[in-house]
Structures are given as C-alpha cells and as structure tokens.
Length: 349
Image (tube, rainbow, N blue to C red; front, side, top):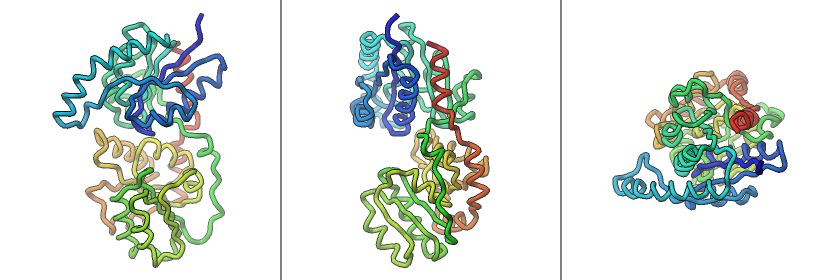
C-alpha cells in the first residue's frame, strides 16, 4: 500500500485557494505520512499562495469558458484537450488516492482524468450558486460537499454534504472589543478595494452620524483620495490593506462589504451584522446568491449595485441592529467545515 495522497485541483482566486489549503492541512494533520499535491494554472493566485503554504504545485494549461469573449472562448476551448492530457500525466506521476476539485479552470480536466483512471473524486462548492467547473463534473464525482444548502439542488445531487466553508480558527475565537458608546463601521472591498464602495461611502459621509467610528480599507489606488474625504470624521482610520482581517471584524459593529464566499464565512464566524453589496459582474451572479442567504437569516441587508446610492447606504446603516443581526450571522457559522470535508474525503478513499 502506497502513501495516501490527496490531489487538490482548482484555484484562480483566494476564495478557492484558502479553503483548499485549510483542507490540505487538516488532511495531513490526521496522519503525518500523508501527502497533498495541488494542481492549478500559472496565471492563478495559487502560483504564489500554494508554494508559500508549503505544498507542491503542478501546472496545467487551461482557461475559463464562462463570461469570455468569442476570441478568448475559442482559444480556451482549443486548450482543453492539451490541458486534459497534462492532467492525465499529472495523475500518472502522483498516483493520488483521491482527487478534490475546489472549482476554477484546472478543476474540471483533473477530475475528469481522475474519474477515467478510476481514482475516487469529490468536489467542494464554496458558493450558493455553483461555478461551471463544479456543475460540469457534479454528475460523475463520487461525493459532493457544499458550503450552502442552496447549492445542492443546483448541482442536482441529493446526497451532497452541507459543510460550510473552511474558515481559519481565529475567526471563531475572536473577542469583540470593549464597546465604546459610538458604533464602529468597517468598510472593505477585497484586497484591491472597490471603487464603487469607496465612491459611495465617501458620498454617504454627510448622511452618517459624526460620532461614528469608521475603519475604511480602500485598496492601494484610492487611499489618498478617500483619506481626504474624511476630514470631518476625527474617528476615522483609512488604510489601503487590512491584515489580519480578524481583528478588524471583531472590533466592528457594522460591516460594509462585497459578498464573496469567504467574506460570508468570516462574517458568520465572527458574528457581525453586514450591509452586503454583491459584485454584479461575478459569474452567474453568485455573490448576490451568497448575500441573500445572509439576508434570509436576518444577518445582513443586501443592496445590489443597481440599488446602491449614498442615501440607500446611509439608510441601511441606520437600520442595522448589530446585536440581533450579529447573532443571526453567528448562527450560520460552520466551525466544523474543514473537519466535515476531510471526513467525507476519508470515506471515499
């Protein structure tokens, strides 16, 4: 019997890669003799994040099909056969005991090659609306894990295991700050910031209470411009990047953010009320689907990009009930997500 090897295929964005790394660490923590190898593309974030986390990474050459122009679509379709051959060879080199697909360009060809070679396969879907890669392979993989119950029928899998999204342990143990009388508002639009959120928050400032404490993460491009707009707010702190995010989430009463799967998972883990503005250009509008899960639970107010105005944002801030909505968010938390996913992987090996 050889070494038990987990192959993880997919990536592209941090929302795919960071949960995959959490799964890899849990898988290896259960048995030191195990191996994990990642498969991705040279132009996804996995190229830097995975080696930095200490895992080997193989590359295959594939591109996206959803939301592409005719030229890119044709080019990426032509690359599929070559990508599949590369996936077949990678599996031949590493002899995985099981292959996990986490979504993203490289996920589909690797899962298909694994299935054809008789290797057990599983997918984990992070969003409420599954991506094209996971929808394409859901019918033939051996097991399906989903972060949101809404994703299971969209994958046409009644046997899907609802696990939640892997979120780092410190988000579940984060302690709220000692509350001052003023509420604290945290604004963030991802690592690069969001021009739309930045512009709208700036215009909403005259409509917000002057004693509101604000931490606003702008991204690198708009730091100075946004900072100048806060002249009337003595309690504002404007930064281009936040790390560690857990400290700021724990200190906030209200959060204004996009609605990526990891943001939703972290808000739930810390238990924070939110105003969510889903990124309208997200594939299949999956961010709005994620946000609506929070809204339905009473944990968030959702404002679509079409509905977003300074007035609507200020009105939403006034309507937020931090304690009640924060508790509703906490009820959605999935502290056992990583464990449940690895349990499911072990069942099919």
